[in-house]
Length: 601
Ligand SMILES: [Zn+2]
Image 1 (cartoon, rainbow, N blue to C red):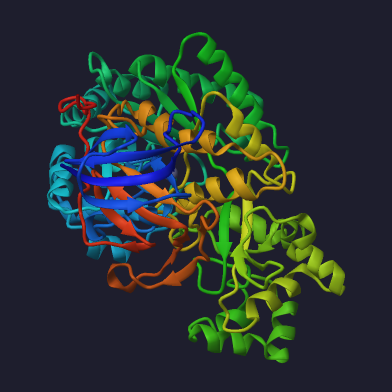
Image 2: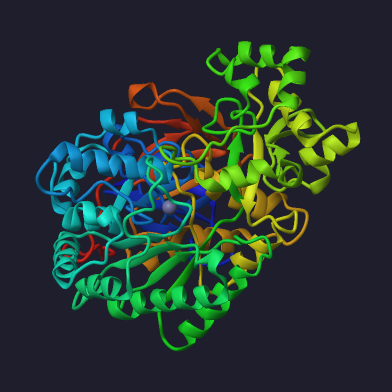
């Protein structure tokens, strides 16, 4: 007797094979039969016309804190994801430095709030911190119920802070003894089943005090010494974000890439790095590709994490920052409820006053807002060519999100049409209605005024679907929906250069699972875990993001659900039915290595 049979679905099995119609039989959390399934079953679901895909594997999330207060990993759960990985980019919440616990906790919260834009008060209230070591952190998370499976990586910054204390934040060079200690702590975590090691090397990541992140300048000896923790282990990956010394020219680039190669070499593990079109010239991403191709040809296991859309921020009157927030005429009304604030902004006298003012500085000492924001706001006329209304209406007057808008729809184009300044066009747009209008501002991957670069990235043989940053940047970004966007935009709606669905699905599933060394998921086949989605291919789409105050201590975040997920199952249990989160909590901490995950039978 089977637990469940899904009948007649269009199976897109994660291998990249063409879709085929089949039944899928499930029992005890695993797929038993694929094909014509005639066995008895407790439940049968007729799924003719729906896609049945493996559950998606999101390599790049920041649920380190949220995993403590949200059992469901919202919003990823709304986007077909059944396995998440956190501990990315070098930030996280374990291990804690010995000694003064409150001080250790405050240090990590300041780091996470600054780098990942997760309110510190929410973290302080929502995370229990009843651990010291990384294995204790894993045990604590494992005890809590969860909807989705998760893996944790050991982040470099907490490791450095635990070993070096104040010297870590002061960017001091690690001594041989420091390096040996970091290596020992990483090894201990890996032996407990941690999925890998992550590090962050970018000038744009700052603590709330405006300091560079502790490991951002870590030297070759430190990286190599830590990476040796992997020696002799048959599991684990390395994840890295770097800006590749963007501000320091081509020599800086190559020196930084040498360090990436060193990390891969010394660890002997697959290393994935963030791949963005970052610079105005737009050439760095090509340099990353060339060096990666050469390294792979010489046998190094490098991978590139790319996003299927522009990476940037969402701007609105209630998001973490927006173009008006530094103007005195705005600051006067900043504490009003949203709709009243919008109405106050529509007062012609206030508008005239603001348009004559200059904006105060937002970044700087004591601010988590990166200096990049001030640079951008100073050039609002230019960058408004890359700011777009996020929500548009189609010919049937239906509202939907548009992540690949034509340049002619930018706020700059709007200003030109009206004969006003870009700031005035932005002002009027944000002041409309109840004040909930949102601006889509793709900072990266949108130099061409289209997703042409993202398309090239998605074709690369070493590309991995990544960079959702789910759980992070909660007041400015909601890219957890980019898995859904892969299907709605790239596999269906785009007017040209579409991906075949089986390719998009393979990226979201088996490719990422294999990168992690998970062989029990990512495919629809007998013996695999029953992690899968049932999708209406005509309706699948990201919903419109909205601001909610559901974080601990009343913190606000952007939340984005979806349309078209008929159901999502984890280990054979439904965690989503018809777009709603169920009460099932089948998710587990997945420990690698010590408890090898294996395909059954
Ligand atoms: Zn990240």
